[in-house]
Image 1 (cartoon, helix red, strand yellow):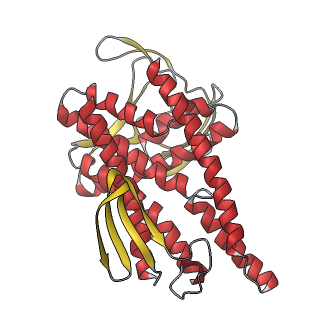
Image 2 (tube, rainbow, N blue to C red):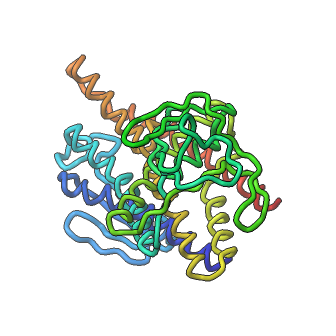
Length: 354
């Protein structure tokens, strides 16, 4: 357990560090003066000045930061962040999330390169007793194209959207022989089926087609899984908005590290355990990429939103907004975000104790 927790902490640090590196490399590219680029947090254990940037390694192997001149105030220097064009600011602010997404994608590519085959959302067969196998229902070879208006890209999507279905009857769109067919109010729900091992379980009664894990299919599977992770964030936000989930259902770093530790410990071997850990880290990487782009103050998405608001204000008034007001907004957002993290961490600890 301790081994996997240490691995999880180091990987968390890697995700934050690569996020900051994305900001750093694009800031340099756009001519912004980077005062310090740090790997890790806490006291310095090593630092070196190179050009106008201090490169430092810090004691706590979690995260890092990219300190740019003029992020929240106009220093009058042409190399300050606030002096740059809006499109340059947006590229710099987006780069961190972009790097997180790329990291998640490459982790999945590495994991899936070990696979022999992948499941695709094309029906191969049905469990014995499936009641809707017909021309008017479903047939082997049908590709599930959408469920309740949500487009399906992978079997992960199928299982997620079936689980989220609010009614017993679904609105399906299937592709059969190149033609898209609607199956409105289709009663595809879990029923008792006997599995190949003789057990009786609640299943949907579908067997999906397997395709060879060729180079092309591996890339496609990694890409589709990355976007499945991204869509799961939006689904979670919808559930929060609709009251189907609450703050108690959220997990912060403590909860995620605990989950990773359990996933590793319960695996049959260290190799499988590490694979499970890396899969969860890929999920976290993509989730970080999406969450950080939400238009919330102090997050990069919130900063981008204010850049756009500033441009709109300039076009209307021919004046720039005072950077100090943006700093106030981000400070307030930071306090709210830290408060939320404290609350989420509290519930994570409660779950661990229980």
